[in-house]
Image (cartoon, rainbow, N blue to C red; front, side, top):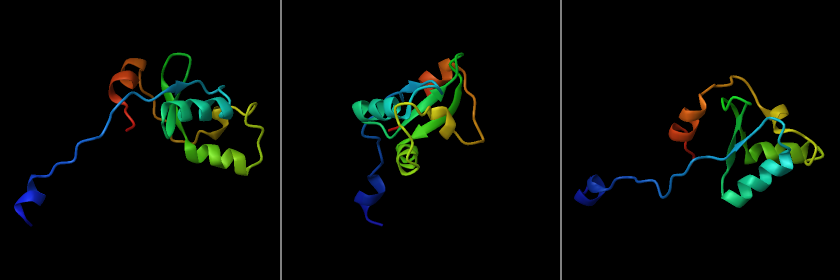
Length: 98
């Protein structure tokens, strides 16, 4: 391996906290949030701010393919187990999608 290859390190181009939505948020609204923020996923949190799942762009495609009415279908119906729970402070400071 050449000298230049050994000295190269990977640094993320940008880090920012992921957007949060409730399980009752519509698929359409979650998709708008992802689009507006340039994200591929949103964190789904309960009323206490605990993470109950991740809703992804792939889930949006699944909802479209299933023929759902996106403005009335909640993201909560797309969450799969296992669900990992984090306290709200941890969500804000430790969960990042680049």
